Amino acid sequence: MKELIRQYEHDIETIRGRIAQLKEDSRRRMDTDELNELRSRTELLETEMYEMMYSAALMRRITAPKPPSPSYAARQTAAAGDAAW
Image 1: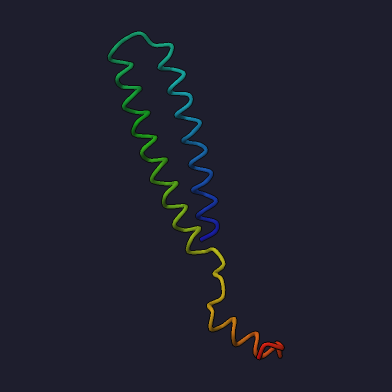
Image 2: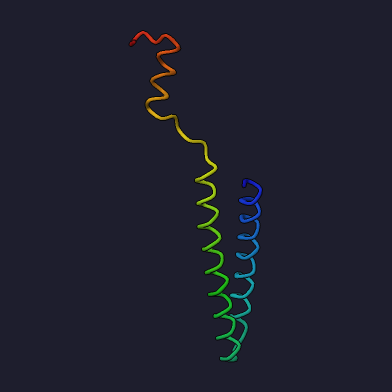
């Protein structure tokens, strides 16, 4: 899953670059039809990028190391001979 997260991050950066390129192209265009098409493509790419960012965040949350539960931590402390026990 970590490889998939890396791939998502790479794709997000690629989409981010493409969005920047489309915005630059839209600044140069004066035709209304072309501007509307570029804006709709930009919005679609932004939506896709945000969905990928959300998916990657969920995957990171699943694969992240989990903190020990309180009962597990108590058992480990007792097994180690903590003075509090």
